[in-house]
Amino acid sequence: MIGVVNAQLATVLDRAPEIRLLRTVGLSLRDLARSVLFECGALGVLGGFSGFLLGATMGANFVLVMLPLVTGFRVPLVLALAAPLAGVLCAGAISALAGYVPARATARIEAAQQSVD
Image 1: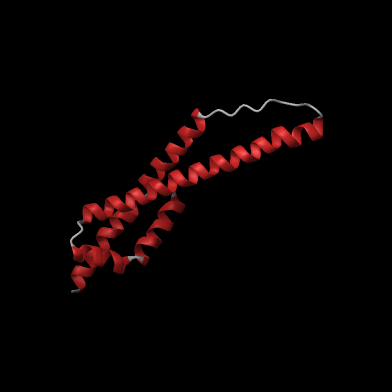
Image 2: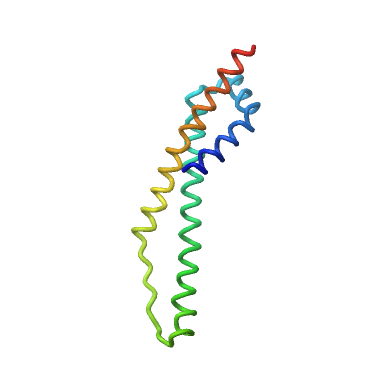
């Protein structure tokens, strides 16, 4: 969670000129914060799904290739989908929750710019 907060906070600070431009065009702070939260959630879902694919590939390799080579036994591969799907959804929810800090930073960028002007 801390990694997502740090990465998204750095992204928000790097995109400060873009955020100011969007505010100038008329995008509300609420819409900007919502887009940051959505971006964080999407990154969490993408990371969870990538982790599931990588883990399933490595697990299948271990069960179907390595285990028979080492032990001589063949074990059927059973891949459950409920727990990994719940993990992917939880990763998205936790990442979206972690996006709250960068979303607030978006509002602060605008407030800091207004106080400078």
